[in-house]
Length: 297
Image (cartoon, rainbow, N blue to C red):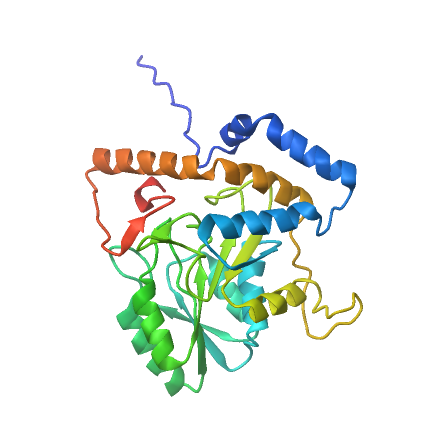
């Protein structure tokens, strides 16, 4: 009788291998937080925000508790609510549309491009007309940079400018990627990302961040992040939530960010190997470089 051995599965994201590579640096980073006991908004949170801004070229970074909170906080800060329409690609994780629904607004799903699976601008224009026809107010667009492939931000931005809409880039699956030589988060008005362990810059739990060029908007986001807090701790000036990033997670992410460039290069090497082996070599003209590849996922 022939016996067949089943090969061990290859993990999509090997968190344990990442942990082994970082070694004692993570232990020491966590120990520092346990020593100073500033578990909420400790110094590591501010340090991480500065490091993230330096990495991608963002002027202002506001960390938060998850990628979903990052999306929701932006929508809350923009005053999105009932009767509003926010346009999302139909091929994305549920959190993209979920965040819109949580505000009471209506997520309007747009077809995606058959080659990249990212938002299709022609379908976006049709969706705008449909939303108005059924009595919704178009407010914003959430393009998703899927599996490390940047959306066509120039085309989306042109539609948004013509229609008077804001753009919230959902880069949860693509932080570290670039669009025409510019890193996601370092251009445009607002970008959100996630630090869930399976994301490009993922570590030991939930976490997220928002990148913006507007200082006034960053201040509103910081208020929303802590129950709508005003100048005083108990001066609540707007509806907010508990959206803070844990200091221990910030400490771990600081260490992970130090090796992130190398991990991006390694992901691309793996993606290229799969592409060659599967015979699926695809060139996306507007994509300068990626942190992951659709074929590697």
